[in-house]
Image 1: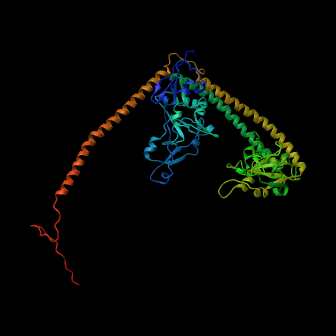
Image 2: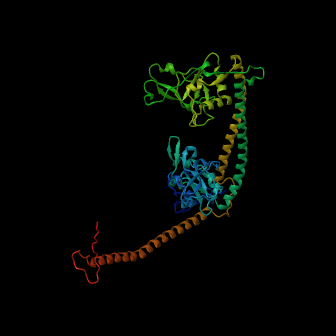
Image 3: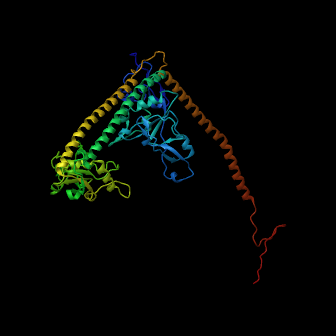
Amino acid sequence: MSGRKASGGGAGAGGSAGSGGTGDAVGRDEGRGGLGELPLGWAWATLDDVADVAGGVTKDSKRQADSTYPDVPYLRVANVQREHLDLEQLAVIRVKPEQAERYRLQPGDVLMTEGGDRDKLGRGWVWEGQIHGCIHQNHVFRARIRSSAVAPTLLARYVNSLARPWLEANATQSVNLASISISKIKQLPVPVPPSAEQLRILAALEGRLARLDVSAKQLNSVLADLDRLAAAVLDGVATGTLLGSGANPPTNVLVESVAEVSGGIQKQGRRRPQDNPYPFLRVANVGRGELDLTDVHQIELFGDEIERYRLSKGDLLVVEGNGSPDQIGRAALWEGQIEDCVHQNHLIRVRVGDQLDPAYLELVWNSPTMGRRLRDVAISSTGLYTLSTRKVKNLCVPLVPLVQQRALVTGARQSLSALNRARQAAVSGLSDIAALRRALLQEAFIGKLVSQNPDDEPAEELLKRIRIEREAAEAERKAARRTAHAGQGKEGQPQRGIKAKQRKASSTSRSTQPPPPHRDAPALDGEQTALPLEFSS
């Protein structure tokens, strides 16, 4: 690869390409994904230089009730994932026919999400015409490539990888949310290789990425198998079968007969930590069989509340509600990690008596057997899943003698430890694959994945042609508008004059007509007068 600098790129109708084309954000290396200088024959451009970028349709709730408008399939943010499209659940929308035509997607369109959660910012993939007549919502941008300036797949790969720092830096940020405007995303700096080199890059890149995807799929399959094995271990504890056929079968007892169940503290304005703050566990801190204590909030307590709400080692913390039925009632054991810690009202505390081993209860509680029981009691008439202290008290749990409980805990921990080691290896493998993907994409977009050919037409030449075509098209549009306006003026003036003359003539005609005769006035010659009619009773 030559050490010479790449061309700065041309200026498009919507903004200039190359150095300075999109202002300081483009001129800085960090604004260009840290790519630095491009190889010979490449050029920097803005997204607007290489693609027509447009937003989608806004849903009109009133129009959805009007059956005169046809149902049109349309893509939402949920359909547009990173480097793939999820079309299993596709919504429909009622729009005017001209809107359906305006927003209709075409094969080769690159789709990008406006934002939402931070991981959604700019994610997307290439539309391949999977569904005829499909349009897209206003929170999804589409980039339609101009004159084959860049291969759609190559652009999509870039936006989903090296462009992400630029997107995050130029998005409107709030707590855990980010969004980017269409005017801003048009300024996204894009490295443009020569057209012939783009084909070579795609051939090399897609083959390598495909092999990495196969490996990642295999590792994800391993993780799914490990999850099933872990669930089987937990069920072995709940059913007592983990110890073999000689173990005593469990009996089902009510939770309230073997444990104390209580709620937590509701977060209110007066609870803002000031004079008497204490550490405070939330739903976010409680996972399934584990606690995340990296972000523990504080809450103000009054009087002797700490004595009533203080967590003790061995307490089981149960999540009261969750939008996902698989997560309802997930629980983790408190080991006394933080002194004088309390919990919020959306966590239910289960404090075991002398018939239960806390570790045994945690394993049983997170088993598929208990998960089904929790879902059965948690579902409401509205379809939402939520628990209460009353529901938890009336729940049945399997009970075996304490000696057997401890043997089950020991056996389960050994099995789960081995499964966790295998899981860590699989997760590490996925992390390595992700690093290899990033390195491959980095190599691709700095011109090191394939060799450069000096005979390739430089990207700058193609960008110049696109710029000239856009300028010519814009000039034609302006000329057409001027002609239309001029035509309206020439044709409209005589018409207005004729109408004015007609109004004047009508007014003059009305003013010269004789007034109607009075009843007492004599009739003119030839004029017929109306005579009063007499009616006899």
